[in-house]
Length: 415
Image (cartoon, rainbow, N blue to C red; front, side, top):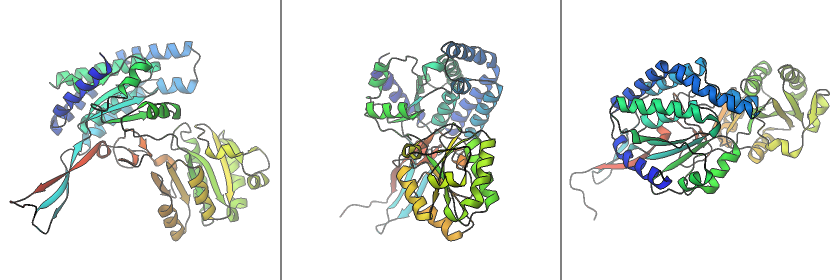
């Protein structure tokens, strides 16, 4: 099927899905969760084909780990589906009803975006996660996974189609692009008449390529250069715990800390032990001149490019700053509007940090790893957007809708 035909067919189906009842959408998701349990051996078999192919190519172990589907991944997927089922349906929600001087009652109603193209790498669970969120928010979805996970993605998509079939819903509300032909994908990225939004999930190279080729709006984040600033009023023991978690809990994620900023008045008391803790956890350290004077061993001198770097690994840059002004200036210059945190017991400093930095999540005395839809109470997420139009931060069900104006009158006319 040609890209324009695929996009057009999905657009036509979007009018069906936009008005589907909450009960019917939840029923499809319940069926999908059941099918995943029933077909687990089939899913493992298809996933093994992908694993064997990437092993033959000698690709990185981290990629193989992201590709792997085991019982733990299955349980996480099923939990995610149940979470989406439990979430309130945003479609049709009416907000902000206000009466105008002429008696007209004006408000807003949440509606689906329409057709969403999701382009992603490596993780086969995204096939199910993206479908679940799009279905519940009333959006048709076109799924394009990475070629390295093709067998797994096709297997999961077969279960999606079967769940729609069993519930009597048009199978055209969800599509899977199986080809890896770039020309095909690039043509699909031009179908702005039929596709309303693109959400790429993957590395910076993938996202930039999508943005360059697309004539359709793209919700994106290029990278996560996340900072923690340890203020002069910090609780040092709390800072040890938070910084360690932010760096090592899952270093290959976009919300892991990449740069640690430390107020100069607390640096000598804080950094030697913090460095020891990090090194014992396998972290390679890079620091400014002042930092290397305090941490004399086991640290490399940082260069200008390190401050821009999203390592996605057990590597951390450390900089000593003279005050909060310098910390904020550093974040604004080198950051990516993703996630920042301050460690402080000073109320005024905490609020100043919150007000003056406009990343998608700004935290006080908590780990950057908490910038996640589930952790923030959204139940699940499509990804994290650093695009301020129309969604900013983790994208849950509400962020997969837009609002239209509605009005109730009794004969009002424009004078």
